[in-house]
Length: 149
Picture 1: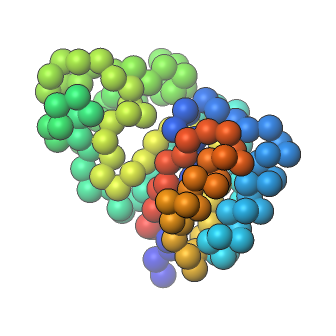
Picture 2: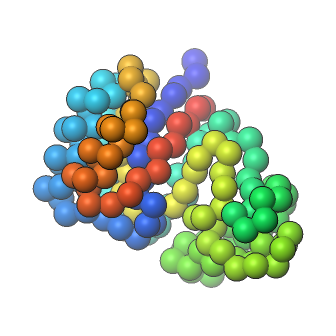
Picture 3: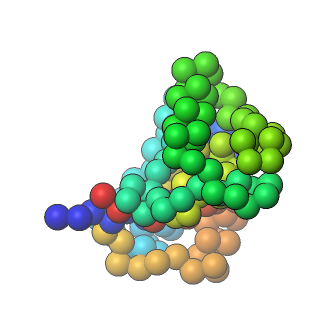
């Protein structure tokens, strides 16, 4: 049976809020989305937070061209092998400009993070007001990721 997850990550892939703040954000997130298995988690290293089958394409943030899955896969492999995602800088092949793997335009949204809020099978989506409230609690901007597996 397909699973749906709503995930929130900081736009700064290295940001981890203090533990008390994490608990407060998790409680607020739980009250807003009313899902199952709601959790806040922190990883030691930066991890890629994917949207599962919701990922349709990846675009260059500089020129808007579609990036090939082959190029992206190689860039991901290299960033992990060389720095365990500590350095996400790449040169995009379309316009040969520098950017971060975290700043690529993922269609459905994805990103890199150490901190994650997640709910399985949420009953509610988050409004812009909900996101602003969570951002004020967390002390950072967040990216909303809908994942489907």
